[in-house]
Every structure is written in C-alpha cells, then in structure tokens.
Length: 211
View 1: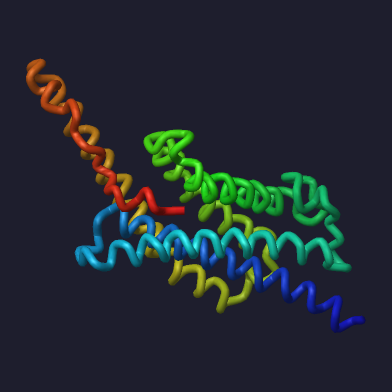
View 2 (view 1 turned 90 degrees about the vertical axis):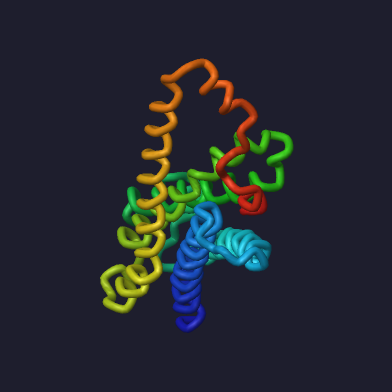
C-alpha cells in the first residue's frame, strides 16, 4: 500500500515534468517556424506536425498530472484543488498558476480545430498567447514543484528554456521595429497607404497547422 501511495506521487511529478518539457518543445518549434528560421522547405511540414503532436501530448500530460494529484494520499487536493484556480491547500498561489496554465493550454491548443469558425486571423492572434502557458508553467514548477530546488532540474529547465526566451525576445524586438518602420512609412502620401492594401500576412501559412 505504501508503494502504491508513493507511486501516485512519482506519477504526478513525472507527468508534470513531461508536460513542461513538451510545452517548451512545442513553443520552441512554433517560434522557429513563425520566425522562418528553418530554411529547408522540406522540413516545414515535419516541424508543423511535430509542433502539433507535442502540443497534444502536452495536454495529455497535463491531464495525467491533475488526475494523479487527485490520488495522492498526502496532498489530497480534491476536485476543487485540481480544477479551481488558487483553491488548493498546498501553496495555493503557485498551484493556482498551474491550473490557469492548464486551462489556457487546453483553450489555445484545441482552438486550432475550430479556427475556421473563429477566423484564422483571430486564431493567430490568440495563438500568440501560447508563450504564457510556457511562462506560467515555469512559475508553477518552481513555486509548487517538489524538484524545484534540485540542481539537475534547474539545469534541465535552463538549457531547454533559454532558447525559447532568446527567440521570443528577438521576435518581440523585430516586430516592434517592423511596427515602427510601418508607422513611419504610413505617414507619407495616400499612395503609400494603398500599397499596403491586400498585403499578405507576414505570418507564414505554415503556422496555421500549429496546435
């Protein structure tokens, strides 16, 4: 019985860690594709498919994480602790952040399959919030995770998350400069404005396959 009880704790830790890694990988691939950093045309469909599958696998891992926490005889969060943000008796703020991240992951991940209903443009704008799932997941892991203080865990998070942080920073700076340049060029004659009409979205079509 003791072994079984300990097993639930191990399962919740493992599934939570796997979920964080999968979300990190999915966000990293999404940034690589959207920023057109992959030059080989043949690699595009593969990366998009990998992005989608890692996102779905991350959702499954998040669900497993929540279910195994319910069975943890020491934590005993109850349904409210797992499903209601900030209702857990154990470190309510950090567990609440994890619950919010989980709901956000579900909404953004599954929105891909209803993008025709909500509109591709709206979906693309909403999909940019995926970076929040990753950021909130990190906050949750370091604030409520059992292994947060372990050196191996910190190193693992650093080496997997550093590329995401760098690419996201580059993307933000690039888009800010592009927006500034566009505002500067838009202050010219009406002919300049008409030149922008019908311009294709800078976001590559390949991103619409992302989860």
